[in-house]
Length: 488
Ligand code: SAM
Ligand code: SF4
Image 1: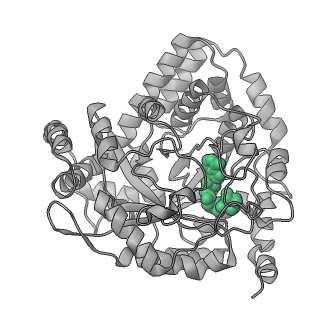
Image 2: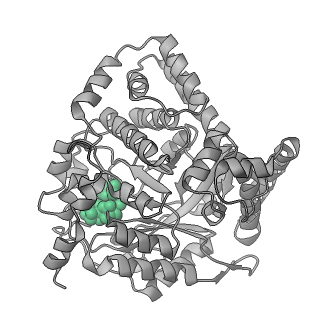
């Protein structure tokens, strides 16, 4: 099939129209702007009340998030930052889940102004990994100690659904000996970051066995969206993208991940967009996003925009974004990536993040093939090895987790959201974190990490003995209430 014919076949307007209400979507620019304006000068009492609501694990209303966006007093920000960490620990315990991204192909038919993969970027050498190469990459990532991958694809007929399915299977096929123990290890959870697709294609992804399906809206502001995503491209269709995760839910993928790319438009507007997206998913499907991402644009090859951002987000504002998202959507995981430098990552992890990548290479073939290191989609700020990042996280008092049990034990969608909002999920996960981290210590860790890690495990085990924690069990599937009844 010619590329032009394939492009014609991708978007199915009937899979957009069915979600519109009276022809309208759920992002109303005027309403959001008015809410941000109305939220100006919030009283300390109101902010305290909002913090208490978040701490009781309730998604905030737009007016409440708008008030947080308008807080000015440094004392109040200190309270918000402290509450963000408290809430994270209450819902997710003190785990940090680790993953690695694996970039499969940089072929792309789109022309996003901020991205090095865009079609018009002639400086980018195009590469698409075959199954053998994906297996080599997987082996390299496994050798670091990872158990969870996110596969990333440009949008192109050559990397369409059949290629994605083969890539997922290739990853799951690999078994590699752990360097310290010689034990066989494999990737236990594959997440996907790929362009929006039809319900039929998403059903095929689901059948292949994926964890989370992630699509970032980039910007919720429609005018900006059309300026940075040319109209004549697939990505130029704002609604096809806005409803990508609705289609995923309909296809049975109930762990979906949203995100906004910060730097394109006013960060306050984007935070409100992420909240409205959450509320829409919660109202329509009873389940909010599994995770929220908040990448900041970093310089990309062949992209002037990425080097001259119209709405550059400062480090101070970035911290506010993370803390406000934490309070606004208490049940969502928050992902901080290697786009950010180690110093800032260290700070925002303490504001409620639940996941991070490490030993990240975003060049195509970047893990196994050093020659391809230059083929990066954008610049990363934290190239440290997994072992180094783990040491740092341990020193901050968190426990690294390689747990992937959730989706294999049926703890997805409504089930996991129920457990998170009842603050029970952390109790399953603490044990799984200890078990999987102990496994890491024996199979991969350096001497120093092992020493630090054993101490943290000792502390965690004391907590486990003190309180009632649950052993994860594959038979515990189905609705949360039934599970809760079964285990108490
Ligand atoms: N092609 C798919 C898409 O656009 O949804 C997925 C792959 S794309 C490589 C993954 C994400 O990288 C994008 O959704 C965007 O948010 C992010 N990204 C693109 N250019 C970036 C840049 N210069 N800096 C930081 N993140 C960037
Ligand atoms: Fe292609 Fe995604 Fe990059 Fe846009 S962001 S150019 S769709 S890879």
